[in-house]
Every structure is written in structure tokens, then in C-alpha cells.
Image 1 (cartoon, rainbow, N blue to C red):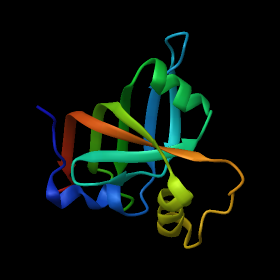
Image 2 (cartoon, rainbow, N blue to C red):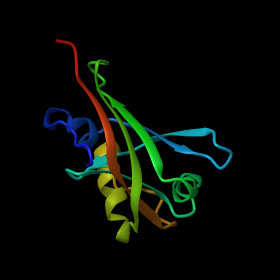
Image 3 (spheres, rainbow, N blue to C red):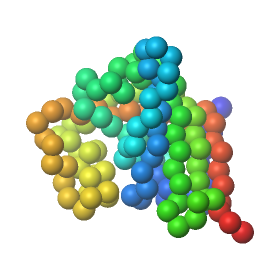
Image 4 (cartoon, one colour):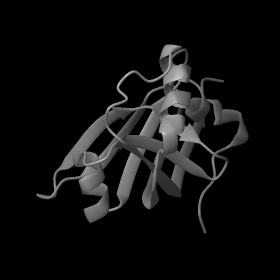
Length: 132
């Protein structure tokens, strides 16, 4: 059964908090990426340019680990392990525009290359509500 995000911590995935997202490289070492992330109520979503190394890594091994930490309370965080269960095109760059507006206040500016969206199913969630 897939895990879920506690409702009082979903803001860590739906505001402008950067995600620390990892993938396994071909040689078995871990690659770490700072990424814009989103949450649809069931899956974590992120994206990249078509043909990126992270996309190749996830196609080879769909295992993902990610974390997000509240800027105002280091003890309010999520640690998530999961799998990329779907990759879909970012039609019209709608997803990356939504993320860019959230994180920068402007539409995404690098429009010359197609992008894809990675849908991550949650297998494990460690959640901390912060300092008491």
C-alpha cells in the first residue's frame, strides 16, 4: 500500500520549498538534484528536460528518494522514498510554467526544449511536524 503525506505537511510540497531529489546512476552511485516539486494528493511530481541524465537514471532504476525542509523550522520536514511510476510529456510546458510561477513568479523562460513530468508513487514517508 502506498504511503501518504500528512495533510498538515502538504505545504512543503505545494509551495516554493525546494526538493532534494536523488536517483541512482549507472555505476550505482547516488545523484542528488535540487528540484521544483509538486503534490497531487497521491503522487509527488517533478520534471526535467527530455533526455536529461536524471530521466535516464529513473528509466534505468525508478527508485527515488527526496526530502523537503521547512525554511522556518528545520525540524518540520518530509523524507520520502518511492518510485517513478509514470513519465508523461509536459504539454505546452503547462506543468513547468506552474512550477516557475510558484518558485520565481514568472513563466518558465527556457522554452526551446520539450520537458517531461515524473510521477512518483510514495513507498515510505517520514514526517516531522516541527518543534513542539
